[in-house]
Length: 134
View (cartoon, helix red, strand yellow):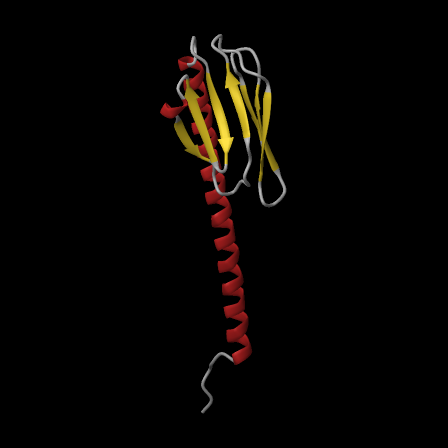
């Protein structure tokens, strides 16, 4: 009596499809997680920048990008607020200064992803407007 069963080729085919779908899902979930981390970083960057502008009136301040950290300072750099730049960006160094009259020196900071794409953060004069282009 012959019993119905799966052949080895059918089992291997099903397993390979399952593994391919699992790996694709894993890659996609990491990508989505990185996007969410970057979004939270840019929201925090904008909030800290606005806070720095408000507090800098009369004493100056700014933000310094160094080795995966954005350091926001007003007056005394020892009382700075540190914001970690996500690991999805490569190391960058730049400084944006806010004068006591709340005008900034125009500056563009480029954050590069390992894939080669860039995020451009432009600090503009006149009330220190911040523009983020992804």
